[in-house]
Length: 497
Image 1 (cartoon, rainbow, N blue to C red):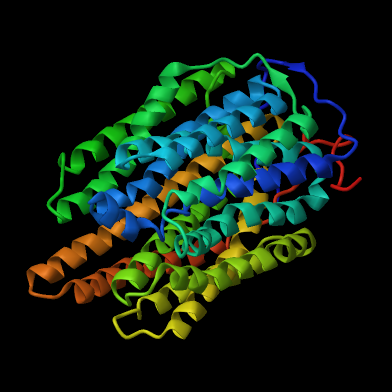
Image 2: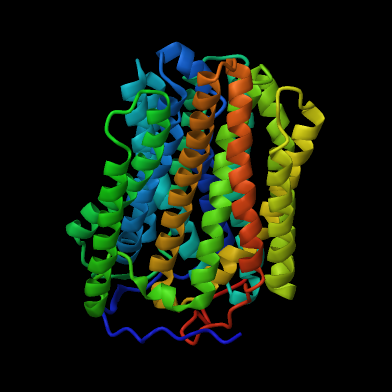
């Protein structure tokens, strides 16, 4: 397949060249470990939600904001990373990201109630948001195209496995400590990563005099924030806790997103866009993004809903829930590098199609969950879902970002990261909303809490299965992009050289 060319930019020229990279593996290894630690916190609260609901006296729809709010903050901050990575040296951006994460973790650990805990999660997310685009851009800049599949396989461990094992880590910690230890135990690890980063990370990307556009940031916050808040408000309405009609933030979000897009289209004419939307002129990028939305929504929706189902319907302990979800996370981690190597040899098509079929089949299997489902079946279906998603993540990420010219790497990485988090937040909100609406309807008809929750879980997973089945058709069109003309040449080395 021949890549659709994007127009040649005539914008700002780089003012700072990257430093030599004699050992790129050291830099990437540290970034991968750091990213794993911070991304782990996207879902580490999911198993703790039932305990927090009792401890803080909040509803499920409110408690899920500790995860949705984290993802939403990332969706608002990640668009800034295109600017940050273009304007500032990599080392400074890395240390800023880790500092924000450390401060947020400390605030959350000391939080006396929900409000301060939510603040800590927001500060945490602000640092986390920077890490993935930073990692993407670094890999694209210093790893040869022929080895990117393998490296993206490693990165997939961060993107998919860290959130997947978050509930397990949470369950193990909560079996012996209270929820504050979810943050106290992470804090020293983050401090070590920041210290090593100060010693080892060097500037390996180009910088330029990029322009900061505050209006774009405002439109971005209104757009993504409004959409996710509106989706979550549907669940609040179902439980009679609605603050404002859900359609109000949805309309504000849609208008904000439209204004953001219009603003970027105008600014990119002078190469001053916060996010350069010319990345969507690559069909490979656009198609992969569409599938990423579906995959991330399914992953995060199931990661939040499963612990609620296991706790409320099957009445299992947190340690049991965490251990039940561990095999799926481990499986995804094991196959990620293998899938990356297969991508380098065969391209994405023979991986993405069966992967989507398996993931869709697993979601259909989840529609069978009820009050009498066996633990063995739940573990088997969850492992099947992670197996399917594991075959999809790496090919989609590599096909999407590899289809772009070098000058658009920061923007492509930022857009990919933004859409991943918006999709994850939307998946979380939609799954919980569907469960809440159906559960409320069942309880109004006289059903008990357990039966009503089981009914809600069924409806949520049924919707996910239908959407995933439709995505199988789109997967048939994914192709490996050709190397772009202005991709890195001499300076791109296989990691380890």
